[in-house]
Length: 380
Image (cartoon, rainbow, N blue to C red; front, side, top):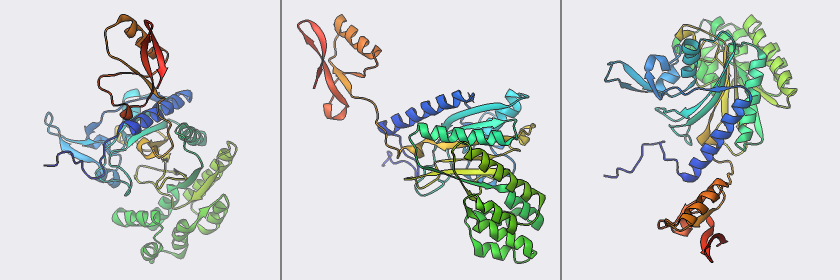
């Protein structure tokens, strides 16, 4: 039996990658703290109804489920940490003002997001609860860029959309259930033939608006074009105005924006602004986020919320220097040797005691040797 083989899209994290992931995690958490975010650590497993917000079929499909032998209830292994943080904000912290929370941890998915993805991402993210303001969305995006910079990600392209545009047209069309989900998926994939088929029975204004969502992509001029092409519905007017204000606020911070009105999230709990960050050298988005104002409703306290998440394992393509070379020291009980090793480690040096080291397998460039009764560091 080849019992060392792992399941598909599941892999070990080996030393070099583990060092890089941990280094990025620490730097990002420190960055979050500078903005006033407090870290929470939800459990890996919960009752399944707590892990699924609203009627989120996509998240339900990605969640591994099992039976709790103590209670007999169905439990789930988290596939997304955001619903857990929403539960903490809504039902445990119960703060009246704005709460800035962050998290990091592994999630497990029944299927990968893409051919090059893992089913066990290492997720890190930050979220703001209790503020529906544009300023909260701007802060989250600014923090996302600062966090990616900590990981060495450069040349970032921010693509922004708004799920309210699709929802307004779907509501006006009276779409529910499977039809609405089919239209959602078709728009996300820019599948124009399917969109034409679905909208064949709609009035021309709604049909034109739906097809316009699939074709409007580019800089700030996209919004002016969308105002001409989309139906004159209050929700659409509000969404486009919000995107216009977001563009102005991000431009003032030196963040360029590209608009994609077919940019839709992978989960159904988002309610407004959605955004993805892309970078040169990466196949998938390096960070994702948006607004999800009703995510806490299931826990009895619906609060406006906005945030982003990053898969740290997805960022390991960024060049990483790794640790500096260490010092190889002999084993022994000589008090002066032990004192020299402790002193070097106190100075931040990596000291590896030789218990049978093969030098080609460890990163050392010096050795600790005794010379005239004194322990000295000698270059190899």
